[in-house]
Image (tube, rainbow over all chains, first blue to last red; front, side, top):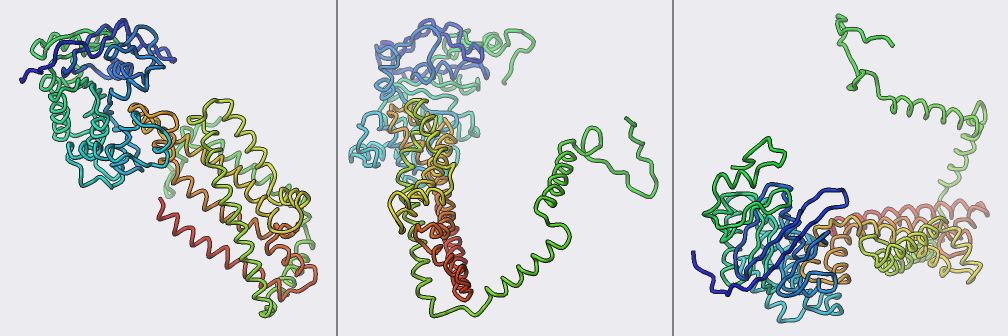
Length: 260
Length: 274
């Protein structure tokens, strides 16, 4: 495994993070975490463990009930959201593209946070932004589909567009929320390889997954989440079967491993 | 309550409704009974009993016979120009309404409004507008600005704003949060979210509805002339009052043709857009 040449300065610092939804569900019950710049971190856990909520608190899609998140020395709060989001990209399980816009425009959405409103409201883009978007599409190998409507693409291609959109942002941190949960195994590996390459160019990568084998293969560090708590934090080598039992075991205890 | 008989009857296939009790659902039975009751009541209300119905049927045939008289073909150019004016009124009214309803729809949609109070207010205004039909608004505008196509266009535009604004707001509200999040998460501001996530996803529905509203407006415009608000309606009432069935036949034919052609046309365009 090639070592990332970045220093060990923290990219994301999370302290006492808790989130209780209006319907009473407690998604996060006090999470403390420091994620180093340039690392590939996998958040592993069963459905409902709080993986999505954790990621969504980092870019402010969810407002935590308690605790705080600091992203590159800036506290995540309402005032700082737009500027934090302009260098924290996100890749979604269901891609979250605007299906009726063409691929290029979807990728250009990654530039919106850095641009003023007026020109963008008549869909007028700066030439250098178009260049950035074109390079991002080239990177994910979809240059030839640039002018097709996004919803005409296959699932794997749509996820590539999602990644291109994230890249177009020129982010320092990329959050990927179950990026391969809706894709078949072959495509999943392509997508994770792509994310891994991107991380090696110095972008901090935080990926939530529920598949243990992918986590073992791609992660530099695995954070096991169960029932809103961090139950494991270590290297893939330290992820023993006993540890998996704690990650995937239910608190009320009847079943052990949920996934193979 | 009798327990259902076991299905042993020879000769006839045992049958039951696919419900827990094997009987038709109560809602269906109540609905059917309700419809029968209403129809019976309506029969006596409309005085359709006995001779009345047959006698009026006779008069109806006589009238229809009059209309199928030889059309007054020399009147055709006048009818054509009045029909064109009618369609123009509908077109202009719809176009004005589209332009006006874009901001109103964005302000009325709950996921796009700057504040819930704005959404509620705009919705209330649009409901008020819709509560009166075009003919009433036309009467109002004729009194305000005088006879001619202008009050007709104003009436059509106003009512269409009420409908298109509501439809646009609903189309925007139907846009899934996923598309919005995908844009929000990259630092887009509220205005950019409206233009890059909400509008692109909502506009095909809006265009489709706009065509329906236009078709409706053509039909609405044909009657606005009755109150002097322009269009072919004026000539239609005059022909009826003067018993000029040869002209009336032509007018009805023109309306039929215009509505049918526009209907087909808008179907084609709509199919392309969506």
